Image 1 (cartoon, one colour):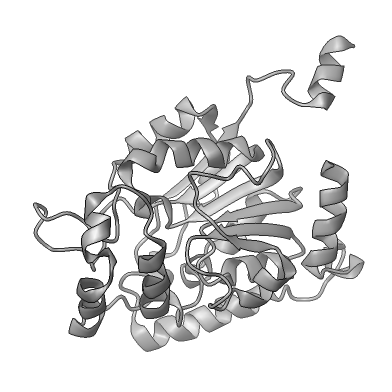
Image 2 (image 1 turned 120 degrees about the vertical axis):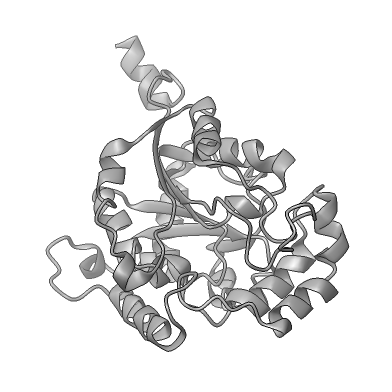
Length: 294
């Protein structure tokens, strides 16, 4: 049941009552992640959120990976490729929301939230930061979570290997906030709208994502050649249309909180998307059905 799962997630989260107490004056542990991210930026520069290089080495593993041919077919997410991608491209970086300094603002946008979902957890740095901030978190990641920095969370059962286009293991309206950062652009184009629908389906109301709107620096420079890393490059309007079609409205109040994003400190501004979903759907949960009957 939903209550049983809530209790189970609380146990797995490792958060005591003091950590969840709104009156707790201790510095949130996730801010230590921001400090580490700033050290990374200082050492690598701000370009690409902390030093995206175009070295021959990084292009070499792209060319030699299994996905050199498989992703070009654009048929399905290539799990083997993302095992390699995580190890070579992001494993040694701070999590993107910390690296770009916006996780704190996202948390401030949803002060009443308790349960969060991270779609495309990467190194699980964001999941760990959210837990340190007192949130109950679940996540999925396409790469093998038993072999990466996610392995401890995988042992607890709070992160699993999976894809965004199939979140059937989670019930409808399960999480207060559904979060996904720099992931949807990696989804094969024909699965993009299905992935959006799944993210919306498991959200109680709020969805917050960041999406790259251009090719990766690791994709072929020639636009005529198929992309390998960023498989779906849509303009902002098309992504917004996909979420609206799935049952959401743009949450402009939440987006206002990011208007003062400091590009001088963190580098280029991410593309922030915030949505309020299921607003016009009635009677889809037991509580709503009871309200209608009353």
